Image 1 (cartoon, rainbow, N blue to C red):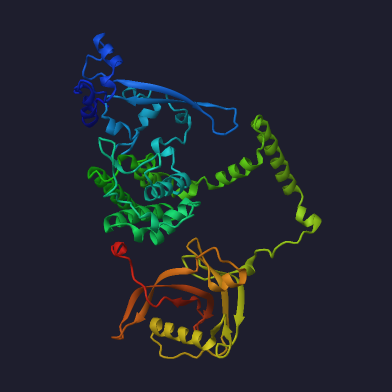
Image 2: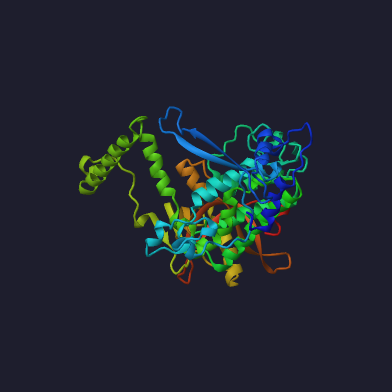
Length: 495
């Protein structure tokens, strides 16, 4: 802290402090501190005065295991800075070099070598990969949730605090009137809240375009970080999104409209996501989701409060025996259980020579005649007319004879590692909890000048179907009900 000119200047607060008679403002006004100064202590203006505090806690109400925490306060810092706790600004600090891990660096207080350096696979800082579940889902998702739901009664306050301990609430960037918040809403799934609820339900209530575009940049960067496939261009785009978000927060802090405590450690980790992805691959590849599911299973099964270790050992042994028995003997075949329809080659249809690996998923229905039959409630002539217009746009043909062509209707589409549902699937499966039948897509159409142009459209997928063109080419289609009136939000026009 003394080596850095910025923090060194902040530490001068204690040496430059002048006490006012009759006032106790901080520790430098106390009798104990003055007595220590009279004894010759803290005579150097570069001396740092710290306070150490210890506390013990348990993580369960009736738990017997306790933990000790040591809290350190640097009194040389202005109380208006110190009271916010630890924070990490978005600074371009270099990652720790390999030598610090293998040799050590006393200047950085690194005296003991990391045991991971003994591994032949050790690669330095990138060896400690980032987890998307804890960093983005629970970390950033909760970070966004707290500022927009903060109240003056909460312990954590993101409002800027003046030196007189009053809060600046008039220009708070994330303020939403309490009356506009939905009562009883719980953020159960932080990732869905961040990627879907915030842009659709929360963002319209934010006060200005600047905070909307900044928050949208954060969500876009997180969405890119969660992709399975990424390019160098997308990584650069992701980095720009995170820089925009951090620049906005930093500006709000400089304007005294936002507390510096908004810079949680997870904010700093965002800066390293593009680098970690370059070194280790997409975050999805080494996510801890499967591990967390196992933890959830054992957490519910471990009932013992005093002998939790023995209880866990018995559970692991039981799981191992069960898994071994399942491999040796098929319990389902032995007792002839009633099982659902097995998944096989008849459950999907591939689109030949398609780089996305698109598939249509069951249930399937076949309709032979497009002249009279209803296709999932839609008249056959309407489907035929839509097909004819499509081929007119794409091939330039003015007419086409459909005859008795076979049209196979499907409920779901799998493309680019994403499952898209349909209204047909929702009806047949009585599925109402998901909205993956709502899509936004580009489509060519002829405008009033008879010129083919591309436009963004929004709608609901009624069903999917495959049709074999007269040249013998198999095509996949989605029959859509397009929204008649829609528009992009003002804060989204640049993205």
